[in-house]
Length: 393
Image (cartoon, rainbow, N blue to C red; front, top):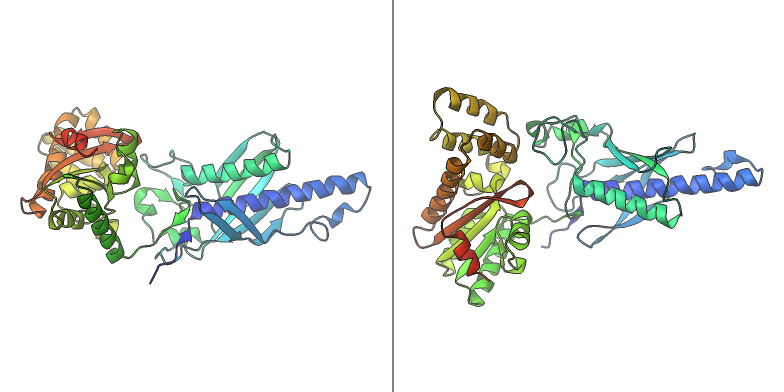
């Protein structure tokens, strides 16, 4: 049975923001007409301005979102409208499905669009995340989606110089967040507004593994000698933008690293190159076969264990404490680099990733590894990685 896709909290926020601004500008326009006609301004919102029931936005993936708008609230000042979109994650087991993504848009004197989080949206308290400490956990792509849709409406209404304050809230978001990784990540007070494509694409584990096998078979049928693989979009983007590799030849393995290795072996490959962000691949260095967080995290423990081979006594204890407080691996990279251990720790990590993957394949598959960190900067690669990479083109 085909699983139903849904829309991210970011898409919901962008749709609600667009609808709120459209209704807000409708109210302003009607008010101007009534004032000029010396008529009853009190009729605004009651008889003259209709609530928007649906709004259409385009997601970054290129799939339109026709969103239902609910709970419209008009401020008495005529300068603020609030409305909501109910999150529907499709068939994905998403704890935010059913949540009301509420957005208030208010006209302000200062030009520009300011986006912030209200009640039920978390605040960042630790470094290494998409947003800076103190900011609302509304990630970059949702912020861009909100701004683009609002600017589109402003342009259509010839109101480009209008200043807007946008507040995204999630009623009950504090409770929902307890069922997520937000508390562990240092995001407090609510959920995050997320999404890179705007679409929630649910897949069963079997469907993912079957897809990996299909792609591997295609690469083999194309006559490729080296299988190029990456866990997800970050790895594919790195290979495309930084290495000049055609992204269509890379097999996306998701969290199923062990399965991908076994499939490569079973389909007759003897060489493989695996590229990914340290946040995923460091788990493989610790022997973890599936990198999904539900099977455990252990990233900092694995890095700390590697550091213990190169740091001693007080230096190690200090690094151990700092690493234990890290939320994201990019922050750990900074700490290890500043300690002068990058040229030892990261090559050892890459060696362990390679050894574990080759061990899973029982020596029938030679694996080379490229690991990158934040902003797609190559952190480390194994000896023959780039030679393998050249042979994939």
